[in-house]
Structure formats: C-alpha cells, structure tokens
Length: 276
Image 1 (cartoon, rainbow, N blue to C red):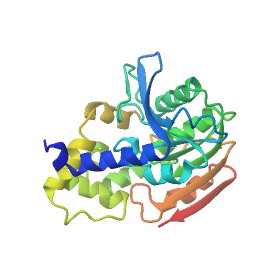
Image 2: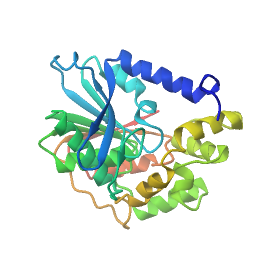
Image 3: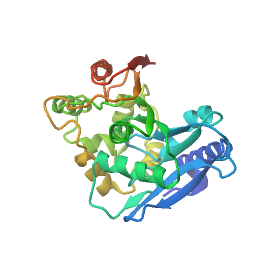
Image 4: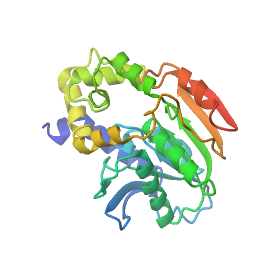
C-alpha cells in the first residue's frame, strides 16, 4: 500500500472533498434505524435556510459518489440544495439487511431524504444510479418532481447483458465492473468512457484499484447479481409520471446509444440528447 502522499488516488480524493466543501456541502452520516447507515454529502446547516429546490445525484457502480459528481456539484450548488448519497456498500454506507437489489437502494435513499426533511426533489442517476432513480420516481411520484437518466440502461434486456459481456470479453459482469487487475480496469475504461489507459503504468492503475474497488467486493458482487432489471427477454418498465430528461454518451459501450432511443419510448414527456 502506497503512503498517502505517494498515492495519486488519495491525493485526488482529498481534492474532491475540498471541491464539495467549497460548494457548500458537508459530509454527513445518518442511521436509518433499520440496520442501515447512509453516508452523504448535503448542504451545510447555514445553507439550508436559503430557498432553493433540491437535487439528488445518484452515482453509478464504481467509486464513491465524490468521484462521480464533482462538476455537477460545482455547477448546480449555487441554485440547488444538492444531496449526494453513497449507495449501500459504497463509500461509508452499510447495511445489515440481506437485501441487495437496486429497489432496496431506492428505498434507502428515500428514507434518507424523508428523515432529513426533503419533501420534494429532482433526481439524477447515472448508470447503476439511473436504475435507482427510476425506482424512486416510480415509487414516489408525489415527491420526485423531475428525473434525469444519464447513460443508464434502465430498459436493458437479457440480450443486452449478454452483448456487454461479449464486448468486454469476460465471463461474468463482476470481472468488468469490479476490476482487480490493471488489464481489467483498462477494459472498463475503454467501454465506459472515451479514454485509453494503455500508456498508463500498472502501478498507477493498481493504486486506483486498491483505493476505489477493493472495499466490500463480496457485497458489491451481490449487488450486481441482485439487480432486478435486465433479467427478462423484454424490458418491463412502467411509464413515469414526471418529465424525464435522457442524457447519453454517444460512445458509451456499457449501454450503447441505441438503448437511449429505445428508453425514450418507455418514459413519457422525455427528451433524448446524445452527449460527446
């Protein structure tokens, strides 16, 4: 294990925390009283007196939330009360429950918001977080005012899962989403973002794997297996009552762009916008 001052992942994590703090957010932890503890970033107490709408950002499957939402937090915090939870088994969020589905994640985030007094909010989820956001909007149409689904194959089918494994050249999804080697991390990066890590040395990637992907591996594998979406040959989605904005990377190979076009047919009042 590299010392903190020699670990780029640790140094960058420190930078991310400073960015969140400078945006008026503070790290907080809440016991939901059911064996589940949720860590989240939310407005400082002095910020809560300001009249602003609430926005919940739900991260994808990978590192903790601060690694995925820096730019959005910096952009939206002047105009929104921004809440950024770590989903269960990511960051410092844990549970004693045996539940492992994305529906359970949605319930936990819903309980968090209810407990801290957030009555109405917009929700944005990316990748796995989009699954959670969809279920939240479906369960609480009176609380969730608007929905943003970003590069998230909520409408995935069994064939989409099979195609992903084939593109990644892996036998199981955890070998892609929970990399243990530099080679596996390079594969994930090549599919998820327009980024080639071929020239990045192994020791550098090993630092990121150790800091970002090593915690709660067993539980995270269970989360992957517990996803309820994509189990059938056809997508089984209910239309949402809210306006839905669909954002997608046009080079995304985890959830290819064609899935965004298909998802548009499942949700009402939606706008589909490819992003570079």
